[in-house]
Image 1 (cartoon, rainbow, N blue to C red):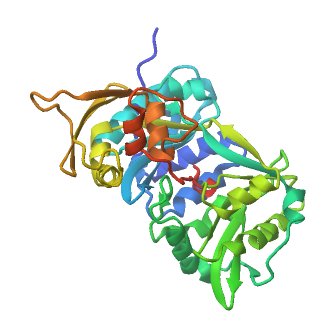
Image 2 (image 1 turned 135 degrees about the vertical axis):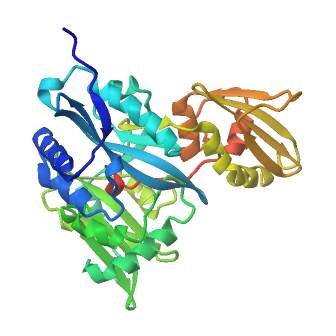
Image 3 (image 1 turned 45 degrees about the vertical axis):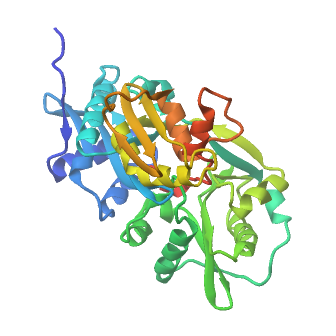
Length: 400
């Protein structure tokens, strides 16, 4: 006899949340406390973001949504991060998780999310549910190359204390102002994170010059593979020279690490440094994206597109009517006399320039921009104008 379809919903009470913690603790080697300390110390947590499947009163699987706002230059987009995915062993292979992912997609659309992001180990599993892999660049460097580099002695490198939280939050905001793909961290984030397992297992240091804190960085614990992640490192404008002594001091905190891994924006002073020290650029494939609301997302970005076109010598004074298609979703862009409108339906009598993008290509253009490594495609000149190359980054500490 066939099993009934499971009930899919968000949790109703603390008892169900405790059951979710138990399932996650059994499923992952980090244990129950890792997940409980992350959510119980998140001031923005809402029970509606913890989802379960239930069959005959038993919770069979769970998924956590980590909502966040992300930058696309000076615009803000709403992203549903997907994490803490676990199925109780006896219910695996019954399709409960796939069913929940479909329900979550519908729920995110209702809640006006623009995109969804997850970090996958088994990509084909999530591809079945509509997520697409968007490769990113990860730098890998041998520790010896860093420790042998010269350092600027102007900077005092000091251990982080909680009293630095407001200072480093200001450095983060200034360094990442209009930086695409970075997380817009609410004010509560900086106190909440002091209780999070990822923070407590990392080491944070600050750089001080003439009594002023000008940079900070932190490094993860060393993994079983002998690698430690540079979780993030930010500095004030004009204080780029703080980065190398800060990095060296962080690496010295990990004597058991053979390699350092880092996601870095192209304009970060350490990007050039890593390459000069012999770092390897790797393409990671764990970031997977889904476009939830295509036209509303583009409409949010209309001021960004308008500025980009106004500043483009080829298109500033040239009218454009573009019909954009991504997966099964469409949007219609009208750029006339320096003004822009992005609508859900075509206007009568307009002959549109038609551009079709896969979700992978669209998200890649959105967060990374069009660069020379992308093969020429139809209307590439228009795409280059709408999606110029970005100095973007998603810091490792923000992963879920």
